[in-house]
Amino acid sequence: MGGDGGPAVTTSAAYAVRDHATVSLFGDRRAIQQAAVAAGIPSPDAGWASVVHSDLAVSADDGLRRILRQGAASSLGLALQQLRNDQVDAVISAGDTAAVMSLSRHLLGTLNGVARPAIAREFLGKQGPFWMADLGANVSCTADQLHAFGRQLVVAARMLSGIDAPRCALLNIGVEQGKGPELLRRTAQLLDADAETDFIGYVEPSELFENRADVVICEGFVGNIALKSIEGTASMARHMVRREIAQSSLLQRMVLGMLRPVVEGIRHGLDTDRYNGAQLLGLPGVVVKSHGSATSRAFEFALRRAIECVDQALPERLAAAAR
Image 1 (cartoon, one colour):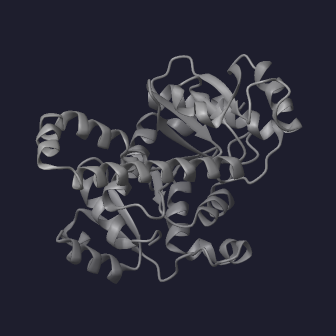
Image 2 (image 1 turned 45 degrees about the vertical axis):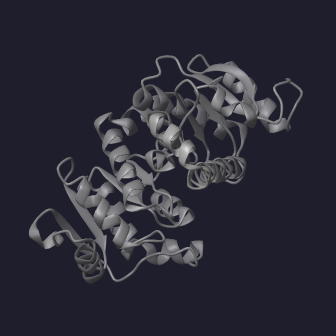
């Protein structure tokens, strides 16, 4: 029920992956049925999905105390309880980030050795994928927590992106050893002493897409600003491509027609929908957070990411890394 589009988005996306997963939809049954009709797809009652009804949905306006007190009966809470009881293998939500994080931690707990979960996501750089965390779950962190994020990110990069020996770095305002707050220097010492993390030092925001590092670690406040800056830049770049094509002359359009594969390649590279779906690392189950403004297509990519996490047994591998 979460996200800007609500069941109109999630129901259509779930229908698209029905051949790859057994789907359960948690929320207002009537709203879900109406969303299916509006999208021109069969009702879940036709058998392609099951519906677990709930009249209650947590929202961004709910305080933490109310979320923890009443959230277990919400659509998100019921889904997480089924995950905890091994009735489902993964939960995907486009709801409020704080609600998803706090309720997941409350109902599922964390892996042994993990104090706080982190939001992690894969990005596409110039030479391949790289991973970042935390992207908003924890506004401030300790050096031990950032170190733990790094260990988990290394596993995620190896399992989900096929990077054999992920290089690990801290996001900082400069690459010199003396740059940045004391927190980063303490974290750097922990990462450098850890044989499981190939720590290469600091990277600046301008270097993120240069693939200097395969794993980039930061506090949630910094990571969320970086994430939204990246998404805003990509949106502006798409706008500029569309504008230039619309304003081009007939001759220019003829040339663009010959360069169509190049233009489509640029559009593909700027397609943030393909990278929708961030993993909540540190939980004993697969929980994927979709962007709140995700389209049905973007939410489908989040669903497919969750399926991949299950196939790779990511929580079990993370549990081994957290010890």
